[in-house]
Length: 56
Image (cartoon, rainbow, N blue to C red; front, side, top):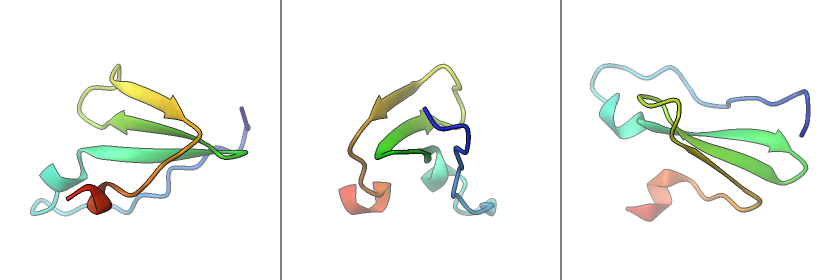
């Protein structure tokens, strides 16, 4: 796991807060963590990620 992990999400407004519940954290080395911004115990780690918007 990289010590340079970054959360590349933008600050959301009130209107799109519900749409931005889930976020991606890029750990580097093709590893990602997807997490629930409302429940910090809900997350999963993967070597593959796609934007949430692509699932709609």
